[in-house]
Length: 139
Figure (cartoon, rainbow, N blue to C red):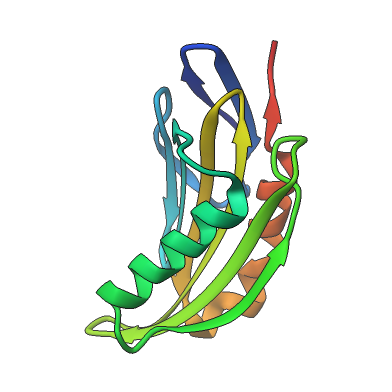
């Protein structure tokens, strides 16, 4: 299933994993299935992807003191250079993995967040990465 995010001056399309149910599409995209969730957002960019990622990681760590950064890497998103970060945290609902991709497209910071239960991460990581790789600008 393809979902679309539409903002003034930008239209993005993303191919969602087959098992995901679309919850919202338009100014943001949200899709979920038991144990996993994808959210796609776009907001005015105030910095490039690496700086935005550093700020987001700092915010996550402040909000979730038990969180741990597993990996931070350069990764393309929607045809532009971007970043990917993987965090793990244990909260009231158990161990969770949060993977986020960021890139600046048409002056907007585009963020794709994938969240799932930590035990399911290995089974879902390729689906989440495929969704990120499918993100594209539409005319």
